[in-house]
Image 1 (cartoon, rainbow, N blue to C red):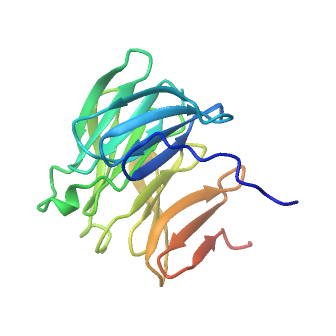
Image 2: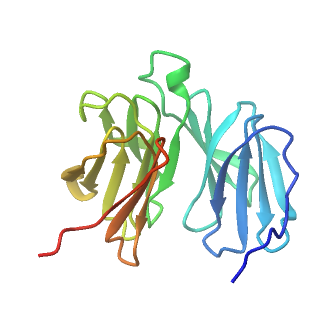
Length: 219
């Protein structure tokens, strides 16, 4: 069955740096480098609501309840935005340990399945925030994982595990943040996703035109 291009959406006037699908799949959010963001109808591409921040954006992520957006900035902040109230509820300084302006860019954002935890990624740190307290509950530095740069972090669908992408992929149990497994990768990781209905595998995209797929070994 062939595919055809259905729509080209021209809302933003600068580089589009992030997309996130609403839990219902009826909407999606976009973020641009000039600080603008928008929520679109998936079927038509029409803008339902839009806004802007004073800082350039680098990431966007929908909260599981679909009412909040996580917005990551290029200058090291993650903001929780309430779409109903049209206001920022929390601002997290996710790059407080970064020494250079380049390292302050937010590379990744991801909410846990229940929305309690929020993972943020900069070049030099992966942090997990408890949104109920708006406090950092866990973090990993480059030294902790013998890494040169962090690029992504994703909770699985159950919310029980967190995968962190650096030189290799590190999987942690959320309960106690205990390391579960390290998956080696010879290429340069760019992003990752959990796959399968029960999140029984991980797929990772790499700079060297490769995609790496991991799954538990057969017993």
